[in-house]
Image 1 (cartoon, one colour):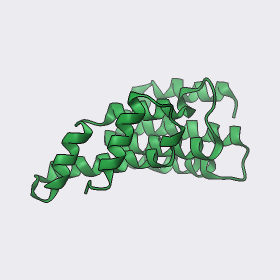
Image 2 (image 1 turned 180 degrees about the vertical axis):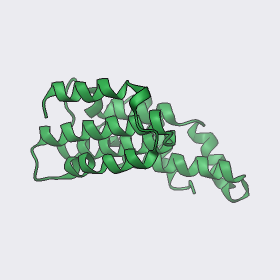
Image 3 (image 1 turned 90 degrees about the vertical axis):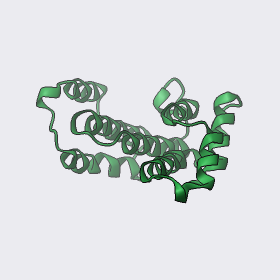
Length: 171
């Protein structure tokens, strides 16, 4: 897929008035690029291009059809982590940079890992919405388990490791 095609898809995503508003439409459409990105028989650059289409569709489903931000963030992080893990980082490209992925995931988390740990100890007594928030964190953090060792030492890696230590106790 040519770079100009990707730019056209991205440009068209900005046209909110003509974007489908049904979440199911977005979920159906993204299956094909997702399966192509997962296809290990394709060349690495082709897999990354299909993954970029998938990521644009995830963004579109959140922006235009109200896909839950946690689901969108988890889907995007999972795709990025999988391809970074299988194909390696791509120098100069934030999408395929392990440190950038960790920053993106950490920017989505809401409590501090220590606060989440305290909540996790008593999660059964929490209101349903707080339980759900802890579960969403657990799902969002899952992709980091396969790539945390690829992240350079520093505060982001330390916070990510703290989250991963808490993750096992989250509901």
